[in-house]
Image 1 (spheres, rainbow over the protein chains, first blue to last red):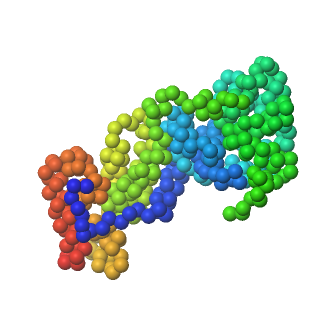
Image 2: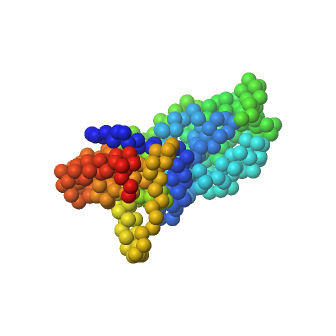
Image 3: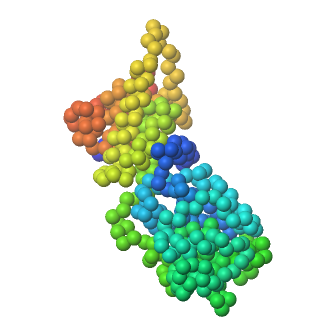
Length: 213
Length: 173
């Protein structure tokens, strides 16, 4: 500003007002005006999760250890730049995640958009959808279900790059020697998830009980 | 499993990609609000704000340039659309309604500015809003309002003077 308005004061837009305006924008951004990607944060015992969907279904789930800006940049580049925070449109997947962390064994039955996976990795994820709750499968056994049963390492890569962990349960894939292996949400989170599916309760690393918030 | 989860999915030309639109809303939401609210009464301003961002989101994949200036332009046009529609539907009457003025209400200073802006002639109001509330240079204010930079500067100056008088209670509309 090149001139001052003093003594006039320009009130700042208060956060509650901006939240209300944003909600109006979300409500209007439907049909032809739908964003390429809508997303929201979901609190979980493993920390805040970011969930993103296209019109075709849930396309990305990111753990807190992933950089949120980086995830949104990736979605803007690979799916489309019309990325809008739209919590209400992701209520169903948020409710499913809440139920899952509370011990619910139901698989996610909503639409899933696997456009961020291609080729063999996509084929692996399709197979992974069929691995039931509470079951552990080895990378080798999962490879055996694909067209390329010797591609054990590639199965590992497909799991490590799963764009929708939890929704597509790559945490159920473990090493043949019984150790749990790596995970996009961190190796500790994988151990916790496997224990959750075994015991119905999510343990904290080191046995510290979950602090209710 | 040694593959880096990010390496495989992060495109090499990320810098060349468009920013996620949500970042535009976060960065410029307050600016667009000042423009809409400065030009319009509160309810209309809320409509204009969401319509501005809806139109901007539609055009975002192809847009290239100064984002703030672009948004102010869209917001200005949305506000003008509302004002024109109201002018068309206004019912002529012999009696003037009593002005529900909030000017001079103690402790209500924020509302005073918005209410006082509504009392300015449209040209002055637009010049004050765009230059002083949105930080747009007079050359661009002139483009927006279809006038010269000198006239825009004069309108803003007259507008500010009038606002000061209104807010000091020296003039009752």
